[in-house]
Amino acid sequence: MKLSFNENWICYKTGEKEDAFAVTLPHDAMQLDERSETSAGGVNTGWYEAQDYTYEKTFTLPEEAKEEKVILEFEGVYRKATVYINGEKVAYHSYGYLGFYVDATKHVKFGEENVIRVEVINHDQPNSRWYSGTGIYRPVWLYTVPKKHLRFDSVKITTLDYKEPKIRVEAWTNEAGEVKVEILERKVNQGVSKTENEVDLADNIVAMEILQADGKCSCELALPGAKLWSPEAPNLYTCRVTFGDDVQEEAFGIRMVSCTPEKGLQINGKNVLLKGGCIHHDNGLLGACAYEFAERRKIHILLDAGYNAIRSAHNPCSKALLRACDEMGMLVMDEYIDGWYIHKTKYDYADEILDNYRKDLKDMVDKDYNHPSVIMYSTGNEVSETAQKKGIALTKSLTDRLHELDSTRPVSCGINIFFNFLSSMGFGVYSDKKADEAAENAKKKKAVGEDITVFGNKDLSRDVVYVKDVAHAFYLAMQSEKTSGLYNMTSGRGVTLQEQAEVIADLFALSPDKKSRVVYKPEILNSTPSYLFSMEKSKRDFGFVPEYADFKVMMRDYKKDIDAGKYKELFHY
Image (cartoon, rainbow, N blue to C red; front, side, top):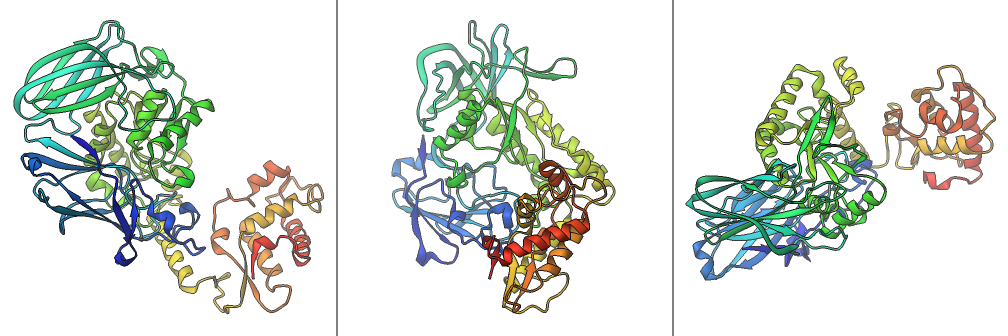
């Protein structure tokens, strides 16, 4: 029996239980945290000062459940989750985007109160290049299953033929016995409104097989006249497997994916052009919470906009999202991770991936296997490790592992050739050294508050004025009537970022009242050329690149506007 375990929790900052408050899962605790310009996560995580949180719930199991196994499923906890039951540590799970099961059978009391506590760690920032959220942000389920049962995530349905529809059903039992396999028609729900517990079954059983199992069992079933699954017609069926008193149901679609140099990507023998986009796991103002309706709404909006495919950037997506994609006909590239063993942020998963990737990939495939919407896997995103022999070997290991677990889907990997070229020359966009430096700079910035070093000058008092976003300032200057069309420079190298910074620092050395310095934020200076004041954006938006002398004039004119009271929102006094 599967029960929602999402009600009647309390949450509090770890160590501050006196301030606990009631929550219903899914829950994103990061939305409660303060925001600060000295946040180590910075713009990537929305300037939140991420904290550690603890969740607790008191629950009672009936006496009759003594003869059953008690299993908890956490679909997603960000991150480094430690689970305690009645004060005893029973599980630890590090990766924040894959679910995990906890066998609580030996740790719970029946007919009495039990207390479950989940501690999550997210203060070690930066650990993400996007908004991650904090806490139990996906649903939790309580299963009570007979001692004689089907293993979790063991029922797998594979399409063997789509022309004359035929499938293979596999399942694992924990002991020998009779297994019944039934295939049922399923209504298609393409609307936004749906909950996980809604049942879309019709009464019609289209196929049935009874077989003997001794650990693993497998059967092939012909389904004459069955409807195929495709983006245009996302027809679904349900496979119901019964082993004694234990019943598991899995939705699936009849479809085969192939990808060859000669024919390209095909679904059921028809070529498919992917019109896709990358999406992160959050739901905007709802934070990281994986609400069923929000995941469905997201897919519905993308379909209405003309997309037929998504890439789960850059981590495995939720079960709710995959259900929506199955039912609405959205194709999915499910991605394992952002980076491998080279840190993109100081405290990301890089130190653990080599030890954990084999189990992680199994967990991902177990989640994805029966979803017809998942047409391929991705092992990583812009992984410049592929410029190294070690990384090339890891690419093969990851790909081989996925093919070992699932031979029906192609495997991809996000590689930026330019990043690889830079990495091979020792100038990689991502490196352990850069991740260390970014984390160290964040610590220094916190230590001095808003007194940021300007070109090595640490002799700054607390009476400081600083530009919040010089990139924005330059962009406004370029847009103003005073500058647009006045300087028509299209040749030459243009003004460099360092020169821009020097000009700005010189012009704004003193505020208009001549009493306080203006601090130019070093993270703007050290940013990539994709910022607003880059040469490429200048060319695109204004048709020219200013030279050094012209830039000085532009910024001098711009400063006059500032002194006259314009653009006050760009400054803190």
